[in-house]
Length: 80
Image (cartoon, rainbow, N blue to C red):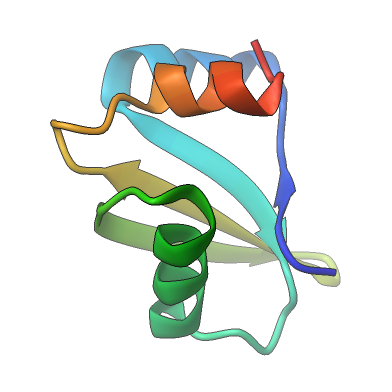
């Protein structure tokens, strides 16, 4: 599994209000690995990553820099 985008009401609100995309990722990946993967896959710059582990899954909230609107990327991925 590479990165699986999360599409919930809360995730969509984060996209619109905070410029944050949420992904499910492999539990052993570090923030640095996630950042490099997102920047290379989507040609964007990441400002900050917050991760959380719930159950046996790891979630990454990825805040993009201002010049890269998350809503544009979400539209390209077909999330919105």
